[in-house]
Image 1: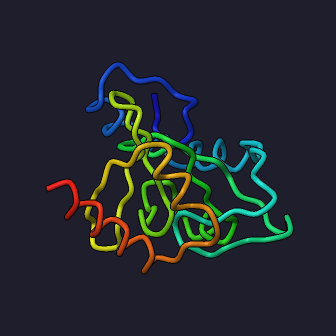
Image 2: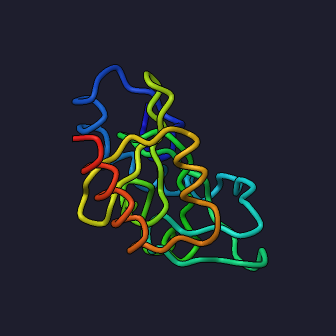
Length: 145
């Protein structure tokens, strides 16, 4: 299945790679024709980290090939050809971790702490910044070692 438009199925990864030059234009048309998913009244673009409040902007809700969860990509980033693959993984982003029921919290330096749902909810109460996340992850990693 084409990972961009999700409309064309292939028998193998190599077949998809070989066919992409012919599929590229059609793929872009499929992507533009996709209806926009509903996004929260306010959201943060996971690519540019811009906060949108008041429902004035729209975004697409996308999947990342490596991580689970919803990724919001604003129209400006989409216009530049950006996708969930380009997400910065900074700020308050969390990755659900299915085996343990924990949430991965990633600092701006790439450190990962697997928080309990309670820790994650407590951290997100209020309006934490990137610096708060970095401090939280560093503290929790030190406590757990």
